[in-house]
Image 1 (cartoon, rainbow, N blue to C red):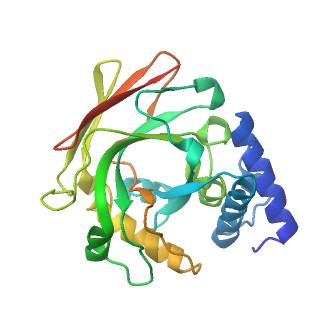
Image 2 (tube, helix red, strand yellow):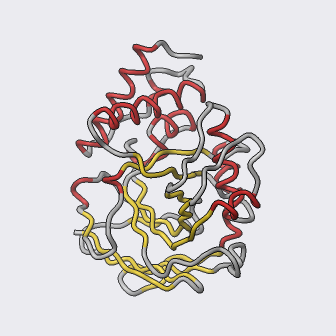
Length: 262
């Protein structure tokens, strides 16, 4: 069911306030049970508009539900996307304040940095690789605003795909000569390995995810501009973190970095 502009604005304010004030809420479909995917994205874009109006810069995009198992769990055949605001980015040398989040979890990902725009429909892996300036390993800190991380698909889309914080580090490399499909990563928490994976966990190849993002945005008449930072989706399972935790990521051929939570 399509929502009115007033309802979209009301939901956007509700969910953004939950993010900014770090308090959880029940999933929005409890009050809007007929919320459809298109209207859920309208809510997300309204949150984005609100931030831009206040002077926040949108520096990129992220993909979510990019593993086959997660898509099956949610009963969908297409991943979802969200936007990345400038204050989501945390330098690897800086500490992330847990009190500004609700129930953070970390995932290992690959970040694509573009040197040319990407447009859909019809975007494909070759176009993504040609438009990529370099890639870096990344840790995304997801933080659903929904109580106990319980939500359905429209609710998580409206909530900007659980976007929260992210960290990039390691060694920047051009994609030429990199086997992104078989690129292995190791995620550690407090010195212990907690998750491993390879690029193929993301739709068979991380660049497939970026092409899909361009095509999904194309359906709204939007494009991915040059100079964007794009998170391809989780290579590993999500791992909960709390104050005092130190998280490290090692990526094959791309070095390593750490971040800590206080």
